[in-house]
Length: 268
Image (tube, rainbow, N blue to C red; front, top):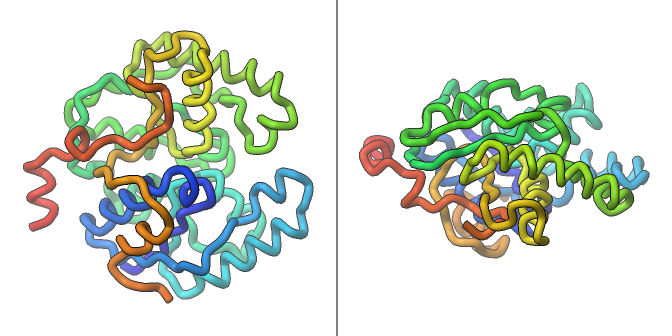
């Protein structure tokens, strides 16, 4: 199967290792991955700021860039939801990574090993726009050594909401404080999600001296091997073909996630 990787603005600028690791995981599962270098923003930030026409224009441009792929995969539920909502019937066959693994590939065990206590924050877009269901939880439940703990008030927003966190900082901070308290109640070592933006927000709370600062780490969901952080050039260099704890969001290490036996089996 040939797919296009949509890395997103946040992934490109702040979390390029998420895109790199997604490539490694998908390739290990036999997927042919390409990274169109012409891709830009999906328009979500513009739409959230009231620039609907500009946002829609960017979404349409993205659709043109990824035309011809069997599927478009992104490590971001919010960006995938933006494209689907705005383009409607003309939308790309775009999937958030865990959604693609479970619903398209039919995979809920990627052969990962991670011996830690973990809780999962279901982001707003994953719940209400994409309706990913229990896919992320199924993936996490299959990770060897991982203890998955239910998050109290899980469906409640963390307070990010893109530009909402800037325009309504006081409300956003109050919502964040509630989410951080819920995370601490789980006594988890790690909180994960399918949106790096929400983890950036929660991680910022820990870094800013929020309740229980330093007791939990924020990480992106869908366990996968780690590659080094790097620029767009390093990410594009990783693709197989041209297409034409500290409380901050960061990626799990390969030594934590890969069960050597499973990894060897997956690579043949």
